Image 1 (cartoon, helix red, strand yellow):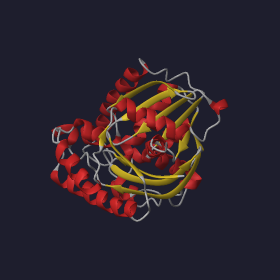
Image 2 (spheres, one colour):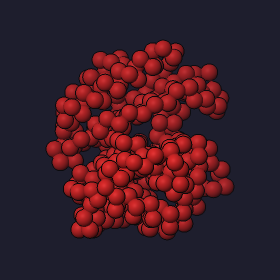
Image 3 (cartoon, one colour):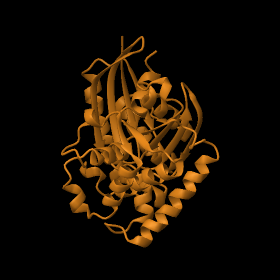
Image 4 (spheres, helix red, strand yellow):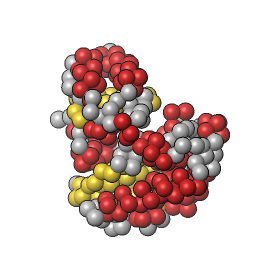
Amino acid sequence: MTRVAAIDCGTNSIRLLIADIDSGNFREIYRNMEIVRLGQGVDKNKEFHPDAIARTLAATKQFSDEIAKRGVTKIRFCATSATRDAKNRDLFIDGVRTILGISPEVISGVEEAKLSFIGATRELRQSDAPFLVIDIGGGSTEFVFGESDVLAARSQNIGCVRMSERHFTSAPPQKIEIEGAIVDIDAAIKEAAEVVPITNARTLVAVAGTATTVAAAALGLESYDRYSIHLSRISALDTHEVSQKFLTRTRSELAELGYMHLGRVDVIAAGALVLDRVMLHTGAEEFVASESDILDGMAWSIAN
């Protein structure tokens, strides 16, 4: 039995998973998420804001304390879209190294996609393959197609934070802002489709906070319940209706929704719009919402 810790540091959140893994068996010990918005302003300025680095390192210290007291033997820390784009990433990397004693990996979009696929599909039946895994993060969205293994993958810079900062200046966004975002999103999806056969999947699996929040809304949950959300099936029609709902609400109205994490209030409209456009372009009738994603894939990757 190997006790591992995986830390996924994205554009919007940083997440920790501690798990025991042995011979294909997986037992979750501890899981936590903090919204730190590391990617604040990165799309425009191409560098990290000092406050964003401070928030993220503070969360990393909290995670380090949890790891230290739980007997972890292996750690993997992966940084994704925002860190790939930031010119001053070394300030962040050095800070993580000081706290954890390991250097964070700044992984490519393709590696991010592969890890998401491993995490998202491990609990699914092979009879449901081929799979298209969609991972809508803060900075990028990963498109991954495969069966038991990844066959094609592409990362596109249409994450919920990036799209919000680039297109939406008001809440709710104006019609012209939504139209501009759609043009941007559709172009990115079409570009991904040149590499990834997005219309050939039997099952579309959507992971990460945007997809699970859309699922919570579609399921009519009063509060966020990851066990009710995990492996639920959400129709394309419900996805569109939830997207339209989020696009027409003020931030205060969104914050009042019991299932809404306050750190997603200002970016969920853009994220849901990305998911809605993905459903349209793939022709999928539904998506499977998965609470298992890149974090779980990272844990499996260091178990042996």
